[in-house]
Image (tube, rainbow, N blue to C red; front, side):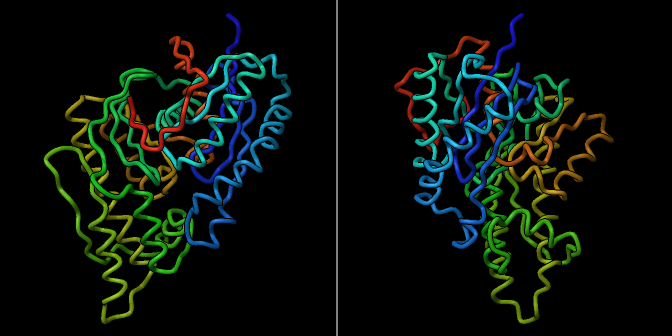
Length: 330
């Protein structure tokens, strides 16, 4: 059977990434141009600046992806791109470029859901991983428990009712003076801390999450405490409490579905505390999969991988494809 080679384009937030992937799992190139140093100056992502930088970087990143993969345009089977969810201006850069590239080289176009991409990052890391499984999806814009029934069929069992987990990390980091990006900085500071501060946890009858309460509690504690707050202990307490909530909901999801495999996905799946806690499911006979750290954050290899599985099922997009900033899974 002839190899299927997908070109992936990802511009949903502040990374301009282009990748070339063979048969959904073998990465030939995965070039990522990050804008973190730019947005650090503002304490978070500025959408207009992100869009402008995507425009400036995307052609150069694409050329580098082909150079590293050592293939030509004629070798591409399909062009895939993120069309949502994400920042609308940033998404439009990738979608527009993908449409033009697809038309120019006369190859099929596929719009890919960004969340599907994060799930597919695990197929690159773990060559043996196949659905069905439970996925804990954690990023700056999404927190969900997803029952992955097949490569292209998903059921959302629980989701956040307010802030996404990555958003909560960023806001806590900003308030206590750590800056952007918040997740890695909170995680690093928590390593030397102890979870001594009591923080609130939400409990729902279903598998939904809420992170606004714990975020507000950390902010209030930092602002109003009569004693000096130890930032390392505060970060450790924040991570410990959030991880307990995640673990409790995953335990309920496992009982509900009978799943024997769980998968982590999204930028927050790089968190060392959460990774360690989820690994403990191994003791219960549950196989735990996590993406390589370099594939946790936004990248085009995961989009090319997800695009491959949609392509072999016969899915295609046309040149009317548009960005959908609030795109839902399925």
